[in-house]
Length: 271
Image (cartoon, rainbow, N blue to C red; front, side, top):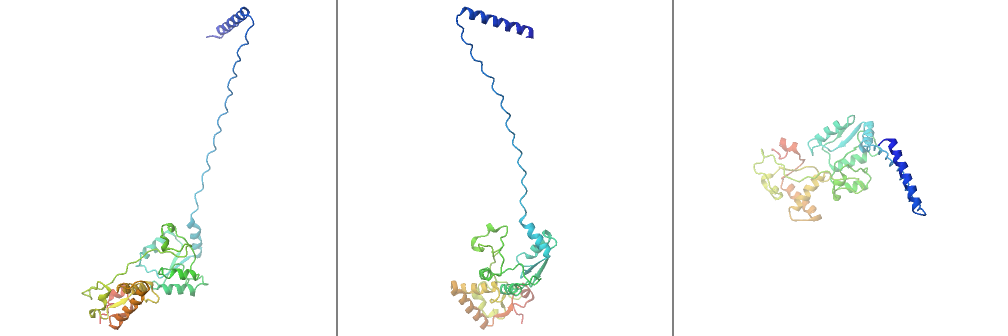
């Protein structure tokens, strides 16, 4: 409708209302008109969440400190053992600028610990940063103060029985003892410890290390004792008795046997 017609309707409505009031006596108060609802304030818009800074790389600070030092010294980590060769290459690729100084790959656990003691106050290249020792020696070495606590990124995945609660040592692998035999010289390989006492193996048996310094050799002596049926500490004594018999029979060769000596025939003794 146009504005003029709207005003006419409004005027008519007012006149009619006046006439009705006059005819009906005391007029009732007109109903209160409701106030228009207040216009609601627009909801406050939330500020966009601040972008969180990425968590700092825990290795970054350690890497920078190691790079400033320039060298990582290891000991008793032969390249053909436990995939250490590939680990060396992976480390050098991931952390350029850090030279690896590999000391005495053939050292035993006791020799590794002695290297720490001898260089405890020496920051030079003869002081080992990393050692690989038998887990049985680790608690005493930690109590002696030879280690620094450090928890690797996979710490929570390591069983409690294979690590120190405070991070001073942890088990990173385990091995299974076995006989290594040069079959080109030994036509009848032994299958159990009792076989090694047979005369046919004279001058052909060696240990991988010295039981006084090598954890692997000490465990071999213990395993030989277990093979006799002894248990616990008695197995250790039984193992010593076993190797005493092996030596008296002339079967034992007092050299450090490994893959090299087996390969070239030093164990067994070709003579």
